[in-house]
Amino acid sequence: MSIRAVITALLAYFSLYAPQPLLPRLADSLAVSESQIALLMTATLLPLGVAPLAYGALLGRWQTTRVLCAGTAGLGVAALVFMAVPRYPVMLAARLAQGLLLPAVMTALMTAIAGRASPERLQRVMSVYVAVTIVGGFGGRLLAGSAATWWDWHVFFLALGLGLIASAVWWSRAPQRAMEPRPAPSWAGVRSLWCEGGNGYLFTAIFCLFFVFVGLLNYLPFR
Figure 1 (cartoon, rainbow, N blue to C red):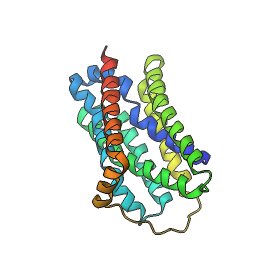
Figure 2: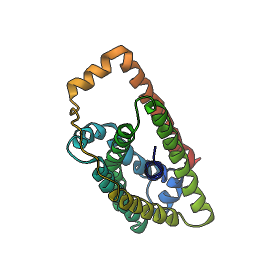
Figure 3: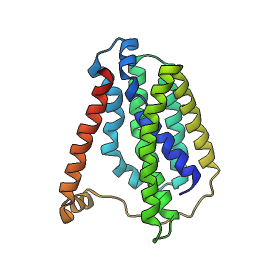
């Protein structure tokens, strides 16, 4: 797994979870309710449930590096808008844009990592990717909260936006690999995967896990 992929994965997960510890402060400054401010997380997480299927088809037609370049640049611009325009509708729209772009970045990253790893190293490389995403989710909360406590939360989002745009420039200079034909995902394939070998029970368990996990972490900052 390259340093470029590690940094991009970290920054992407920073952008996903960074607002979470700031929800009470943002609710006060924007004069909105707790349920309204929690939509800043929902607006980003909701597209993650369905968009990867669409982006899987997109990656069958576009270069992976092109998707990463456009996706990370868009995430960076959305982070800067979120930071620079302190109005609830604009911030919510920026978070929704990030929710639409994050699956593209995540799917393209996994495609790039899997495509560059030999079969005997694939499991280890993907384990490293999962570990990086966990560190990114933790780091986004920690750094955003620390910036808000000791300095100003705007500083974190400014650095995040610039970092994502720099990452996009970095990917634009990556060597282009020849595209390999990939089957486009289909709903029939999704249904088959859901029913195969008890996968449906595993997917349901993951849904319940994240239902509690994200809900609890949205609630705790207010207590």
